[in-house]
View 1 (cartoon, rainbow, N blue to C red):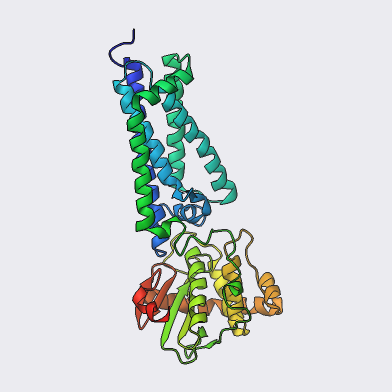
View 2: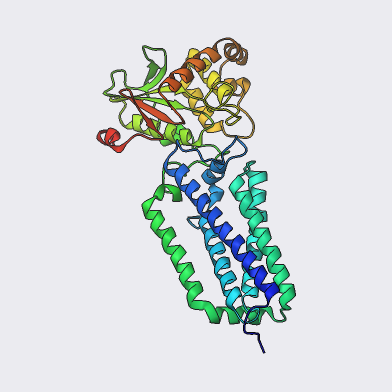
Length: 395
């Protein structure tokens, strides 16, 4: 006969499992908030983004952060919620019935964490602190499930699972449906975070679609140097001038770059885009206190020198297309792509490039620019993206 209450040793394990599951839910919710914030606001930077290779934002912006149209963090929240409910059930159950389903879900989470750790370390070459915390939670829950299974002495796992499903099927279905409704609701509220928005097209570490392919065949947009010496593309006599402060290793900037080019292509006689440099690299930007986009200053200098050689916009396209790859863009590789002499470009970088980048960064700091991309229109700074009312007349 089954006892009326859960045995004390097993009860303690269920209490621990419940606490760890609750921690998992909290971590998953925070990861979801990070995911949404960095997708809808390109200027946002989460507290757990510490450097170029220790960044929750980089993970959230990668194509691996979404499964079946829903962020992995929400799937994690669902799994941890189920484990929490099973822990509460275990505290009240007569016998060991909840152990089997708890163990299966915990085992799935533990295996999934190994896959995600491989993707993070090998494919993205990035460490997400919050993700690591969830992996610790996963294996802690699996260890608890293993101990409970040994103490409960389960003889027939399949029977235990069938009994658990029959006993709590309405409750488990309600949790699944509830999380699904939240996910569907968020797709409509913040579609930018689920692959429909402006930043989801770029996966850090990969190239953009060739910019020329985004324009009409044979299109060559007018370009030049403005009165202050900055490169521009678009109208010589614009009705709208947009000054863009950007970083060649910033995925949001890469998307904005494509979108601004499309905007100018539609309105070549009305819109001008002026490019300014604001590398998020502590080697040339005092706003950045620790290593982040470690090649961004060097890439900005390459672009400055390409401008002096009359090839800025070609270099600009190339750096946005290749700036986030593992192998850094060099003066030699850029010169080869542009068809110019590598030594000429390298000499310019060493003698001239840094001063121009320094001026851009200093002016950006005076404008209180905190992230990239940032846009300036008529003296007003817009972080991340331009408001619709400015662009509406040109759509």
